[in-house]
Image (cartoon, rainbow, N blue to C red; front, side, top):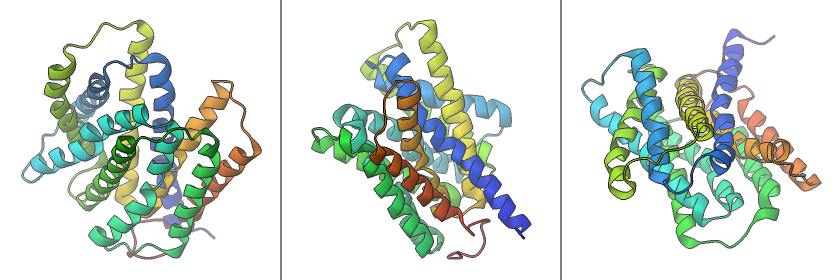
Length: 295
């Protein structure tokens, strides 16, 4: 019979899955409704409103070491990360960028081993490898010209977010997920503010559809997603949560099919199945924070 801990682990796993699913929708929303000419402004309007919203909910300011920790996480998980992801999307085919980002669960496992003493299990390593294979199968037919700077941008963004997630988990005992998300999103947004104004000036006027799109990206795909992601990281192993990130490209592909009228090949369906199998493999017997290295 399933234990209470296992049931709790699955609940937190499902909550954590909200984040990559909503992140997988961001590309589709951005492509269709958000102006592409102002990437820094788009990153700013994604991070800062989300952070201020959560700050209004929690009404707590950082104390002590959390002033610099919020800045570090703001750069790694929000400010620089959002900009690098945008650059990668412009310099690389979406398929290539997604393949590179799919390496993040494996990188998170290695960083968690080094920084948190969470030894990666064979099951989770296999799940990560299976997930990467699935992403390749899903997107291999869409590979186009590869730009070196795009690869650097994508790999840097992937490494930064993996490190930011592990550091957030390392520091998670001091504040709750809503508070930590509020501080890092606000810090990231404030760091972006002068840069966006210097390079792009005041935001352009946008139509009602763009306003709704910005609101969705900021409130749902950022504020809510960050709380779910970092809430799951507080209670589950970093490698276990990292594998959930593989749901990001799956969401993007399925949205392209459902909303964009794209037809998926048998190879793509096989890739989706492989990704889901890899994610599930990493969740089996992986509930709770438990002893590092436990299955």
